[in-house]
Length: 119
Image 1 (cartoon, helix red, strand yellow):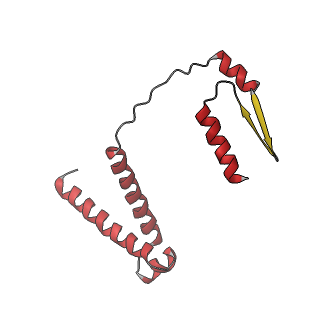
Image 2 (cartoon, helix red, strand yellow; image 1 turned 30 degrees about the vertical axis):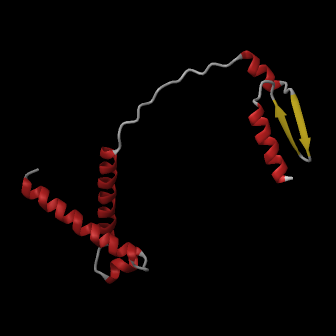
Image 3 (cartoon, one colour; image 1 turned 180 degrees about the vertical axis):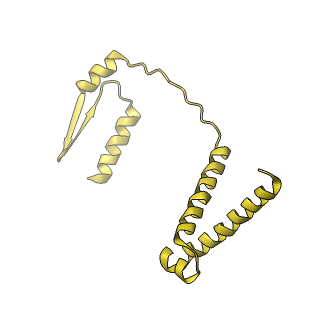
């Protein structure tokens, strides 16, 4: 595309962006607003789609690539067994809490404080 065509396309895009913003800022439906302002419904939605695509493309360009990694998960067989058979079970009304062997004192205290504040 030559410079004149690019400039013309950018101008039209800015012009339609303003039109669409005006329509969306009004309390009217799109059909009513377009009717009052002599804007074709098909043209409105055509340009709305173009503007949204342009916005999506600019967001994609600015978004840094996310590095994805596979992190290996290692399970301790003892942890698996203790989660199946809890060392302690606390029943409080309809709720029950299972505490696995090896759970830190801090975690147990936090859970008990939370229960105390609820009950």
